[in-house]
Each structure stands twice: as C-alpha cells, then as structure tokens.
Amino acid sequence: MSGADWLSYSLQDFVMFGPQVFLRLFVRINQDLWPWQVLAVVAAIGIPVLLFRQGRNARCFAVGLMVVAWVASGYGFLVGYFGPINWPAAWFGWAFVAQGGLLATAMLFGGVHGGALSSGRFVAPWLIVVCGLPWLAVAESGQWQALALFGIAPGTTAAAGALIVAVITGPWRWLYLPLLVLWSLFSAAMFWVLQTSWLLVTPVATLLLVGAGFWLSPRPARSLD
Amino acid sequence: MAGWFSRRQFLINAGLAGLALKSPSLFANTSGTPSLSPIMRQIPGANESIPAIGMGTWITFNVGGDEQLVAQRTRVLKTFFDLGGTVVDGSPMYGTAADVIGEALDSLDAHDRIFAATKIWTGDESETRQEAARSGRRWGLDQFDLLQVHNLLGWQGHLETLKQMKANGEVRYIGITTSHGRRHREFAQIMEREPLDFVQLTYNVLDREVENRLLPLAQERGIGVIVNRPFQGGSLFRRFQSEPLPGWAGEAGISNWAEFFLKFIISHPAVTCAIPATSKVEHMKENMGALYGALPDADQRQRMADYVRSL
Ligand SMILES: NC(=O)c1ccc[n+]([C@@H]2O[C@H](COP(=O)([O-])OP(=O)(O)OC[C@H]3O[C@@H](n4cnc5c(N)ncnc54)[C@H](OP(=O)(O)O)[C@@H]3O)[C@@H](O)[C@H]2O)c1
Image (cartoon, rainbow over all chains, first blue to last red; front, side):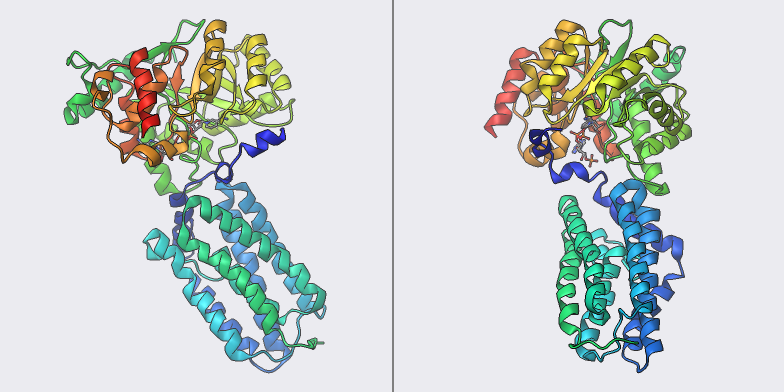
C-alpha cells in the first residue's frame, strides 16, 4: 500500500464495532460471572490492606492478587469477550496475561521491594481507581450492570496496576511500563472514535498514575530479599 | 435462488402492506398511485435482476456472541428481507459479522432469500478457495452469489482463482472492491482488462469522483456497480439531518434524508445497487423506502448535489 493510501485511512477505519456493542461487553461479563465478582471487589480492597502490613508474605500476597487481576482481565475480558469483535483486543489480552507473568517473575526474583510506602498517598488514588473508575462505563451506558470492576475490566485493572509501579524496583519497572502506555494510547484512541467521552478518563488516569507510581516509590528502594 | 420467487414475493408483499398502512406516502409514486414494486436492476450481461438497495454489515453486524444483539440484528435482517432486499455484503475482515449473518439466516430460515456477497481478504493469494469455504461455513451457505477481492489485496492471484471458480460453477459472479477513493487508477486498469461481473466502490452525494472515470467505464464494459459508504459511514446524516429537505424533494420521490442520499446514488445509470449498513430496524425501514417510488431524473440529481453543497 502506498503512503497516499495510508493517509486516506482515518482512526475510524480501524474501529470495527459500535459503542453499544462495546458497552454491552461489561454488562455481559458481569451477568456471566455473577456472583463471583464479589471476589474481585474483595481483592480490590484487600490489596492496599496487604501492602501496608508488615512482612514479606503480605506484600507478596498483594502483588499476587495484582498478578491474578492482570491475567483474569486479560484472558477473561480481552481475549474472551472483546477479542471476537476486535482482533487487537485479543493481542492486548495476551499482553495482559504476560504482564501478570512479568509481575510474578519480578516478585520471585527480587523485583518487588519491601520498603515502606506512604499509606495515604497510595491508598487515596487506589480507592479512587477501584471505586470510582468502574462507574464511568455505567455513566456512559446508563446501565449499572456495566460496572467496570477491578480484576474484570481491563481499563480499571490497568489503572490500578499503574500504581503498583510504586513497589517494583529497578529494571523491572521499565519492563512493566510499555503495556501500561500502549494500552492507554490504544484505549484512548478507541474511546475517541467511539465518542464515549466518559471512558476517556480511564486511560488518562492510567498515564497519570504511572507517574504517581514512580513518585510514590521510596528511594533508595530496598529489595524484599 | 431458483424456485424461491413466489414465496419471497409473498413475504415481501406482506411486509410492504404493513409498512404501507403505516406510511402510505412511502409507496406512492409521483402520480400518486401506490407502487409496491421494488426498483430492480439488471446485472449487466446476466439474465438476472437484483433490488437496487442492498445491505452492508461493516461495524453494524459485528456484535460477537451477544445473544441479545444477535436477536436484534436478526430483526434488522428480517425487515430488510420483508421490504424486498436480497443483496447482503460482508467480508472476513468484519469480525463476527459473518457469524451473525449466519445465525440470523438460520433463525429466519432465509438462506434462499439472500443474494450473498462476500470478499476474499487475505494477502496469501493461494488461499482464495479456502477463505471462500470458511466464509461459506460461517454464513451457512454452500456457495456465494458474488465473491469480490477486498480492496485489491492480492488481486492477481485471487482473481485467477475466482475466474476458475466461476467457470466451475463454484460462484456465480466475481468482482473487486475499493472504498474511500483509494487506488482508482489501478482499479480502472483492472476493469479494462479483466472479465469482472461487479465492482464495488464508494459513491455518495459528496464523494463523486467515480462519476468521471469508473462509473462510465463500468457502463462501457458491462460491469455491475455496487456502491459502498452511501452515507459516508453515517457522516452525511450527522452533517445534514438537521437541515430541511428541499421543497421539491417529493417530486423526486424523496420523503426523508435516507431516501435523498440513496436515490441520488441508485438513479445514476451505471449503479446496480447501493449497500447501506444499519444496526436499527427503524433506519432499515427508512433506507428500504428508497427501493420504492420515483427516482430523480438527471436534472433533479444535479439539483440534489447543488442543494447539499449549498448547506
Ligand atoms: N472496501 C470495501 O469493500 C468496503 C469499504 C467500506 C464499506 N463497504 C461495505 O459497504 C457497506 C456500507 O458502508 P458503511 O457501513 O461504511 O457506511 P454507510 O452505509 O455509509 O453508513 C453506515 C452508518 O449510517 C448510519 N445509518 C444508516 N441508516 C441510517 C438512517 N436511516 N438514519 C441515520 N443513520 C443511518 C448507521 O448507523 P445506525 O447503525 O445507527 O443506523 C451507520 O453508522 C459496509 O457495511 C460494507 O458492507 C465495503
């Protein structure tokens, strides 16, 4: 294809589904999972509680829950529900699974530090993310069943996952970063084309939270080992 | 599609009668007498006519495994058939649209009411037959009426195979597609050289470049023309729907903007069929209104283009 041909394409040409179909994905996955999303809510609240408990095990458990959230939202929502109507979503789904694997590996090989975090500065944005962002899909669709929960919906999971940068050390962080940025850009472009303006808040928040994660991270970082 | 006409005609008339009761003006031609016959166009070089309004499926039918939306799109397709439509256009590029059409055809038991057109969309030029077969399984059809090379992707290899498939009776018509005004020069060269039954291209009241070369060439070469993006992907409605129709629209057989846009297209003598896409039953009814009544003449077409430009 020539350069002129590529120029004749707009962002619109790459989004092959409508907003109604996209928003129904949240409703459908919630209906199909009911009542198991209670576990996702417990994990969302449990992670900050565990992160601020003393000891390596609690922090590992918290990070382990984040690993599960990456894998579950990637494989469940992106591969299982979104992928069939949008191929790049399935690729992102596998990238979410890999991100979970990366975080697990970091945890096993000293990439998660045990240093103290400022609880207020971490917990406030975390709670805003896991309690606030899920409602954007509700606002957009007008259906409360569209709640985009942490550990199920990829946007909320990625936004919360961005804050986890605060407990990752050294080079592991840089490996963890690309998916957060790529996913945010991809989803922002998609919401722009779909004109679902409420949903645009999530990728913007994710990018800001990456910065927050770096800022919250204690220096010099102390490894868990 | 042999042997289906009487059943189909009965179903069409039943659908039309319902719609005509609701909106009698839709089916009145310029002389005021009700007209229940759809506007049909002969496929050049073939002893067959198809309705001048078909249906596209890009975006609108890609609803995945959402049973609620599949049922709703099935109602859209049913409305299309009931109002006299037959030509449905798809592509393996359109996500789950092919599966949704297949499910809808199954639940409507309508495999014999469709003129099924899909595309070959793969860079592997040896995959033509396999891809057609895969699409056939998804649509629930033994064979397609029309196979088109999507956006000229790998067209040399695919077209050779499609010609053989047509000769073997594996497909009835073959063609190529483009859209958004892309690669028109190469498109024209293929039209000049190859024995095509159909071309598919973008044409609407704002995008009229094809009037200069491709439409006259299609007429000259006896190639049917299927028009995609008749509403410019919906943007014509966003731009003009809040404006009033011109006072003389009724004389040109037009009672709403959908008919304005579609009748402008199908009144071009080179055009065989326009394939608007919609996800809504109400929009389908509006669009199918363009399949009935009077069509604008050449003067009125000019006034339509001028009117839209003036807005
Ligand atoms: N290269 C290719 O081969 C190629 C390229 C482009 C398109 N195509 C084919 O051509 C078909 C048509 O093109 P398209 O789908 O891109 O665009 P289109 O038919 O010009 O426009 C579709 C849009 O118009 C809206 N619409 C339809 N009827 C309406 C009405 N009565 N009132 C208000 N809005 C209405 C639909 O929204 P609602 O759902 O809300 O009604 C939809 O968003 C495609 O579906 C595809 O099959 C082929």
